[in-house]
Image 1 (cartoon, rainbow, N blue to C red):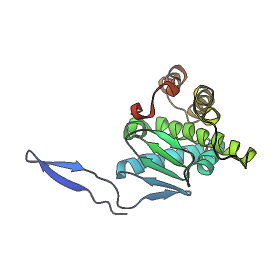
Image 2 (cartoon, one colour):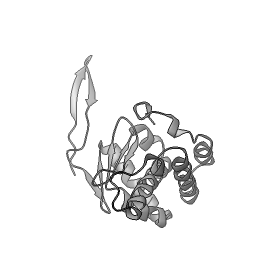
Image 3 (tube, one colour):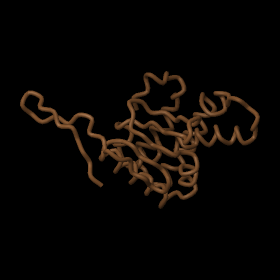
Image 4 (cartoon, helix red, strand yellow):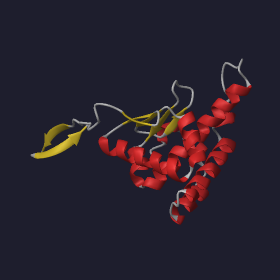
Length: 176
Protein backbone atom coordinates (compact mmCIF):
# COMPACT_ATOMS: atom_id res chain seq x y z
CA UNK A 1 0.00 0.00 0.00
CA UNK A 2 1.33 3.42 -0.90
CA UNK A 3 0.89 6.43 1.34
CA UNK A 4 0.96 10.02 0.21
CA UNK A 5 1.78 12.82 2.61
CA UNK A 6 1.49 16.49 1.97
CA UNK A 7 4.83 18.15 2.71
CA UNK A 8 4.86 21.85 3.56
CA UNK A 9 7.97 23.98 3.94
CA UNK A 10 7.82 25.74 7.27
CA UNK A 11 10.72 28.02 8.14
CA UNK A 12 12.82 26.13 5.63
CA UNK A 13 12.09 22.73 7.22
CA UNK A 14 9.80 20.06 5.84
CA UNK A 15 6.64 19.72 7.93
CA UNK A 16 4.15 16.89 7.52
CA UNK A 17 0.58 18.08 7.40
CA UNK A 18 -2.45 15.91 6.92
CA UNK A 19 -0.38 12.78 6.40
CA UNK A 20 -3.27 10.41 5.97
CA UNK A 21 -3.20 7.23 3.97
CA UNK A 22 -5.19 7.64 0.75
CA UNK A 23 -6.88 4.34 1.45
CA UNK A 24 -8.22 2.80 4.58
CA UNK A 25 -6.74 -0.49 5.65
CA UNK A 26 -8.87 -3.48 6.55
CA UNK A 27 -8.40 -6.04 9.29
CA UNK A 28 -10.92 -8.89 9.67
CA UNK A 29 -13.77 -6.68 8.51
CA UNK A 30 -12.78 -3.63 10.56
CA UNK A 31 -11.89 -0.61 8.41
CA UNK A 32 -9.13 1.63 9.79
CA UNK A 33 -8.75 5.27 8.67
CA UNK A 34 -5.85 7.48 9.67
CA UNK A 35 -2.18 8.16 9.16
CA UNK A 36 0.01 5.22 8.24
CA UNK A 37 1.40 5.15 11.80
CA UNK A 38 -2.13 5.19 13.27
CA UNK A 39 -3.29 2.42 10.93
CA UNK A 40 -0.28 0.28 11.77
CA UNK A 41 -0.77 0.66 15.53
CA UNK A 42 -4.51 -0.08 15.38
CA UNK A 43 -4.05 -3.16 13.20
CA UNK A 44 -1.33 -4.43 15.56
CA UNK A 45 -3.67 -3.82 18.50
CA UNK A 46 -6.39 -5.82 16.72
CA UNK A 47 -3.88 -8.64 16.20
CA UNK A 48 -3.06 -8.62 19.93
CA UNK A 49 -6.76 -8.83 20.80
CA UNK A 50 -7.34 -11.62 18.29
CA UNK A 51 -4.40 -13.63 19.64
CA UNK A 52 -4.59 -13.04 23.38
CA UNK A 53 -8.27 -12.46 24.12
CA UNK A 54 -10.44 -14.02 21.42
CA UNK A 55 -13.72 -13.43 23.26
CA UNK A 56 -13.08 -9.69 23.51
CA UNK A 57 -11.93 -9.72 19.90
CA UNK A 58 -15.27 -11.17 18.79
CA UNK A 59 -17.00 -8.28 20.56
CA UNK A 60 -14.73 -5.81 18.76
CA UNK A 61 -15.37 -7.27 15.31
CA UNK A 62 -19.12 -7.60 15.95
CA UNK A 63 -19.54 -4.13 17.43
CA UNK A 64 -17.12 -1.86 15.52
CA UNK A 65 -17.07 -1.52 11.75
CA UNK A 66 -14.77 1.48 11.44
CA UNK A 67 -11.96 2.85 13.59
CA UNK A 68 -10.91 6.30 12.53
CA UNK A 69 -8.31 8.74 13.75
CA UNK A 70 -10.01 11.77 15.28
CA UNK A 71 -9.45 14.78 17.53
CA UNK A 72 -11.57 13.19 20.28
CA UNK A 73 -12.21 9.60 21.29
CA UNK A 74 -15.72 8.23 21.40
CA UNK A 75 -17.96 5.42 20.19
CA UNK A 76 -20.61 6.21 17.59
CA UNK A 77 -22.69 3.09 18.15
CA UNK A 78 -25.72 4.50 16.30
CA UNK A 79 -23.93 4.83 12.97
CA UNK A 80 -23.95 2.17 10.29
CA UNK A 81 -21.43 0.69 10.65
CA UNK A 82 -20.67 1.54 14.27
CA UNK A 83 -17.64 3.84 14.28
CA UNK A 84 -14.96 4.33 16.90
CA UNK A 85 -13.26 7.72 16.85
CA UNK A 86 -9.83 7.33 18.42
CA UNK A 87 -7.21 9.98 19.09
CA UNK A 88 -3.64 9.54 18.00
CA UNK A 89 -2.52 9.99 21.61
CA UNK A 90 -4.62 7.06 22.79
CA UNK A 91 -3.68 4.85 19.87
CA UNK A 92 0.04 5.54 20.06
CA UNK A 93 0.46 5.63 23.85
CA UNK A 94 1.22 1.90 23.80
CA UNK A 95 0.06 -1.15 21.91
CA UNK A 96 -1.71 -2.57 24.96
CA UNK A 97 -3.42 0.73 25.79
CA UNK A 98 -4.65 0.99 22.19
CA UNK A 99 -6.02 -2.56 22.34
CA UNK A 100 -7.67 -1.98 25.71
CA UNK A 101 -9.24 1.26 24.52
CA UNK A 102 -10.70 -0.45 21.46
CA UNK A 103 -12.10 -3.21 23.68
CA UNK A 104 -13.56 -0.61 26.06
CA UNK A 105 -15.47 1.19 23.33
CA UNK A 106 -16.62 -2.03 21.68
CA UNK A 107 -18.39 -2.80 24.96
CA UNK A 108 -20.25 0.54 24.77
CA UNK A 109 -21.42 -0.48 21.31
CA UNK A 110 -22.41 -3.94 22.59
CA UNK A 111 -24.55 -2.39 25.34
CA UNK A 112 -26.21 -0.16 22.74
CA UNK A 113 -26.94 -2.97 20.28
CA UNK A 114 -27.99 -5.52 22.91
CA UNK A 115 -30.63 -3.07 24.13
CA UNK A 116 -31.87 -2.53 20.57
CA UNK A 117 -32.21 -6.29 20.08
CA UNK A 118 -34.30 -6.50 23.25
CA UNK A 119 -36.38 -3.46 22.24
CA UNK A 120 -36.77 -3.70 18.45
CA UNK A 121 -39.59 -1.14 18.27
CA UNK A 122 -37.66 1.55 20.13
CA UNK A 123 -36.80 4.70 18.26
CA UNK A 124 -33.86 5.62 20.49
CA UNK A 125 -31.57 3.88 22.95
CA UNK A 126 -31.60 5.65 26.33
CA UNK A 127 -28.22 7.21 27.12
CA UNK A 128 -28.06 5.48 30.51
CA UNK A 129 -28.03 2.10 28.74
CA UNK A 130 -24.71 2.58 26.99
CA UNK A 131 -23.05 5.67 28.44
CA UNK A 132 -22.96 7.41 31.77
CA UNK A 133 -21.67 6.15 35.09
CA UNK A 134 -23.10 2.61 35.17
CA UNK A 135 -22.19 1.83 31.56
CA UNK A 136 -18.75 3.37 31.97
CA UNK A 137 -18.01 1.24 35.01
CA UNK A 138 -18.99 -1.91 33.08
CA UNK A 139 -16.91 -0.90 30.07
CA UNK A 140 -13.91 -0.14 32.28
CA UNK A 141 -14.25 -3.51 34.03
CA UNK A 142 -14.22 -5.13 30.60
CA UNK A 143 -11.15 -3.08 29.65
CA UNK A 144 -9.33 -4.12 32.83
CA UNK A 145 -10.03 -7.81 32.08
CA UNK A 146 -8.71 -7.32 28.57
CA UNK A 147 -5.62 -5.42 29.76
CA UNK A 148 -4.81 -8.28 32.13
CA UNK A 149 -5.31 -10.89 29.40
CA UNK A 150 -3.05 -9.07 26.96
CA UNK A 151 -0.43 -8.59 29.68
CA UNK A 152 -0.56 -4.80 29.86
CA UNK A 153 1.58 -3.04 32.42
CA UNK A 154 0.43 -2.72 36.01
CA UNK A 155 0.53 1.05 35.47
CA UNK A 156 -2.04 0.84 32.65
CA UNK A 157 -4.30 -1.51 34.60
CA UNK A 158 -4.14 0.71 37.68
CA UNK A 159 -4.73 3.84 35.60
CA UNK A 160 -7.87 2.28 34.11
CA UNK A 161 -9.08 1.20 37.54
CA UNK A 162 -8.36 4.53 39.25
CA UNK A 163 -9.56 7.03 36.63
CA UNK A 164 -13.07 5.87 35.90
CA UNK A 165 -14.91 9.21 35.71
CA UNK A 166 -15.05 9.53 31.92
CA UNK A 167 -18.77 10.24 31.97
CA UNK A 168 -18.07 13.52 33.77
CA UNK A 169 -16.02 14.87 30.83
CA UNK A 170 -17.97 16.50 28.01
CA UNK A 171 -17.28 15.03 24.58
CA UNK A 172 -15.74 18.28 23.32
CA UNK A 173 -13.11 17.99 26.07
CA UNK A 174 -12.13 14.37 25.42
CA UNK A 175 -8.65 14.54 23.98
CA UNK A 176 -7.42 11.19 25.28
